[in-house]
Amino acid sequence: QSAERPEARLDLPAFYIGKFPVTNALFEVFVERTGYVTLAEKQGYSTVYYGRLSKQEDKATGRIKYRSTASVRAVTVPGACWYRPGGPGSMLHRKRNHPVVHVAFEDAMAFAAWTGKRLPTEDEWEAAARTDRGYVFPWGNTWQQNACNTEETALADTTPVDAFQAAENELAIGDTLGNVLEWTTDRCPSPSSINPQVLYHILRGGSWTSQKGISLAARFKLDSRSTSNIVGFRCAVD
Image (cartoon, rainbow, N blue to C red; front, side):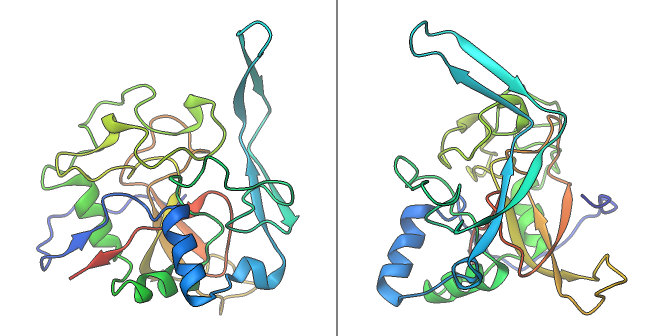
């Protein structure tokens, strides 16, 4: 996570932005119609994150058991991709309305172009999420417990994009905080002096691995070829 930008008032040309991140169901239509193959599929692996806090229900007793580890783990998993989000053996069953994950920047751009849309700029994303009120969170300036899918929900996975109605802002734009990080078109210098030529982009919104209290001002830098189960996107159009 990088430092937040100084707060500023911007005048942006009018634009539309997706109410929700792009879902598995929509991405599946794109793949079926075009035969598109994502970067994760081509390279044969992707990064799978495992949450620090998770809960499971004992089906025999109905009691909830919590499991915690020292930190979030990130593992390179052969075969992990958008339709196998956890790797081989996983599937999209009951996840059609979850945000698509394991999408690189180029994959997100390809989907957006196919729909006649584009990815938002960082300024557009933040303006749409925070509205003209400049809220810290979608609902206001005070954190609300379990209002969005972050680490504190202990779900340790994505949720349907419309699962947290309380996280919709006054423009009815949903899922801007938690669930998945979202690509923007803004580039940034590589934080690595070893490979300074690698292209990085800014992502916004936090994910299901984010700690409670994460705000709409949080910014993240990722290699544009990075793919994982905490990264997705939403589209915009002029």
